[in-house]
Image (cartoon, rainbow, N blue to C red; front, side):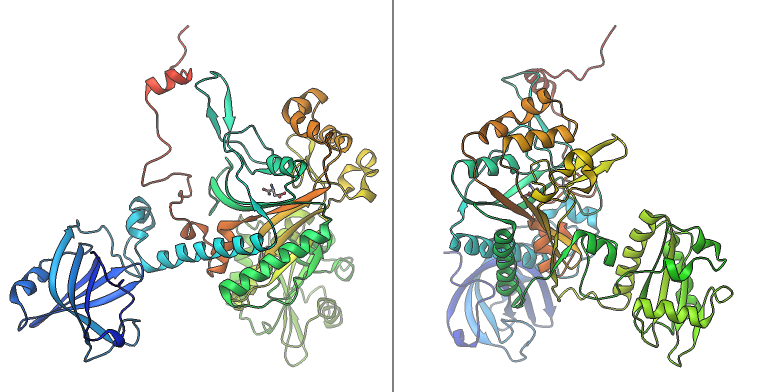
Amino acid sequence: MYRSHNCGALRVQQVGESVTLSGWVQRVRNMGGMTFIDLRDRYGITQLAFNEGWDNDLLAQARKLGREYVIRIEGEVLERESKNPKMATGDIEVKVLKLEVLNAAKTPPFTIETETDGGEELRMKYRYLDLRRDPLQAHIQLRHRVAQAVRSYLNEASFLEIETPYLIKSTPEGARDFVVPSRMNQGQFYALPQSPQTFKQLLMVSGYDRYYQIVRCFRDEDLRADRQPEFTQIDCEMAFVEQEDILNQFEGLTKHLLKEVKGVEIAQVPRITYAEAMKKYGNDKPDIRFGMELCELMELCQGKGFKVFDEAELVVGISVPGAANYSRKQLDALTNWVKRPQIGMQGLIYSKFNADGTYKSSVDKFFDAETQAQWHQEAGSNAGDLLLILAGKESICRKAMSELRLHMGAELGLRNPEEFAPLWVLDFPLLEWDEDTERYQAMHHPFTSPKPEDIALLDSDPGKVRANAYDLVLNGNEIGGGSIRIHDRAIQSKMFEVLGFSKEEAQAQFGFLMDAFEYGAPPHGGIAFGFDRLVALLGGSETIRDFIAFPKNNAGRDLMINSPAAVDNLQLEELGIDLRPQQD
Ligand code: ASP
């Protein structure tokens, strides 16, 4: 027998019992005649004690153990003389009577402790060692708990968990596909799913009216920080539903998760339209843990001879509570912050509404106190607040202000990771204009249904068509998105036409789906949650990598198995792929 208890189990109640434990040697501490070993497994740490007076052979054996050796011991539980209230097992220790080395270990390349001395690269290379550390253990266990809570909620609501294939044909979700060459059909390729979108819709046609899957998706995107080429979604679809039904169902899931996992009760998830979100926050995934809404100041700013304002497409401000006492240095730092290339502004204008009721701004030459008072009133300031103003090209300026708002929220400590503020964003535009291809693209995906009242605009003004599409946002992160789908062949082909597909192209790529719509397709809709991001947020972090057992790095590489990698020529030959340079 390897163990009677795990390393997190023993308490004073077991004092006097004979126990068997197995685990990893976290640390050996030699103190005069005593040696202590911290024995670790995923449940916790138990202190093992060896004493000169007890068994000197054992003591000598213990002193030779290295970090991360795997050992098995038999011993007796003793009450500790000096207890450690910080450890769950801190009241006891185990007097070792028998020690067996199950496997020796090389010295690990970094310390396997809560805080480690290992850099990111090294820890990725030895991920299996990093995963032994307790923060990672907690993350992986949290992930498991969230997955189970998702399943239990959806099972309870009669959803069926159904798997869909990984070797498929392209599903357009806006990224590139990963492709897999077919040996049996040389020159032909499978694509890995960017999501199970078309399959889940086909399941609705088949009558499985509530489906879900915790499923891997693959998108070959240019890597942005904290994106993974493969990631996990909670993918869901329902038939015979309207948007309202879906919002209610998944608002329920969100509340259930927050309650089960964090013990947080949410009364109701507020809703905002896309248009409103852009106006108030400059952003379609606003963090509503704090206010500081954007305020447009064009009318109050222009025509006073200040060129920066007069030439701007947009003048927009936020009122930062209690920041009127910001120093020159702090304001300079903010100015530099907005001038960084990622933000792209030329400068920052401020106006202080001082606690004593006076005004002081960087543009006092052009704007008197009365005008500044009007700005502050428009922005909802109180005495003591600081108005920050950006002016310039609409698209850049609104986005920059949105970033500045988040920055100020963080600076003022208003973005507490243990506070959860979910939000529905509704009525997304159906299409967005793509400058590069000079075409409309589906904002969500091409299967999203236009709002019935906007269908007529598809011909006259496609950019104005709103979709029955929604996102669920949590603390400024999009954690879920979905839509009511088109279930009518004619509208689906119209949609492909608007997106610039020829009839033949649409038929070749999506004929199977449009054909299915002619065999009794029910009205349906769904949503998918980004599972990795959701778990990370519940874990109080925004780094998804730390919540995936074996993630890729920012360059899309797995440093542990060293992938992607070349394959040997024989393999390529079998696949009919010739990588050698062509000879003339
Ligand atoms: N397939 C969509 C996505 O991956 C989600 C959905 O529409 O259900 O974003």
